[in-house]
Length: 193
Image (cartoon, rainbow, N blue to C red):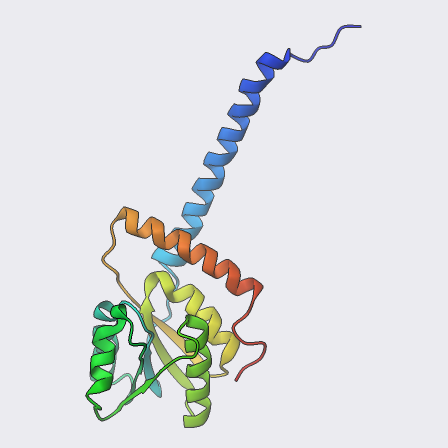
């Protein structure tokens, strides 16, 4: 009895070609999704709020946007995450000055999860119903998810624009994809703080 199947030597290139096509399609789909979630996330217009919160990290990029929002009258209170880490030196320096209308907090742990819990507690303790949160565009999606899990306040995200080249963006896409997956699997808060 003869088989219509090609010999094993001819099947291997066909399998490899199929796997290659699937990998290219999968990578293209992931890049498109990563672009939408991390490079160009959906942002609502910023309106009057009780506080402007600047999340830690990339402070040279995030802090000016937070200060501009307060200067423009979006909120009277500037709230800064203070970590003592190198990427947050500009915000930590503002916290060391003890400025009026500026509140600083140290998240525990020093993660986005810790920041979400701390911001939720500050909102609850200060009676804040509306908060504008500033972070880098690549961080907006995950930070927004954590904040929504932890706080009943209305959160509006404001994304600062990082100065990254293609390799930098690719690194952020990989890091944020993994972190967002972990956030979905393990929420920052089981219920609002």
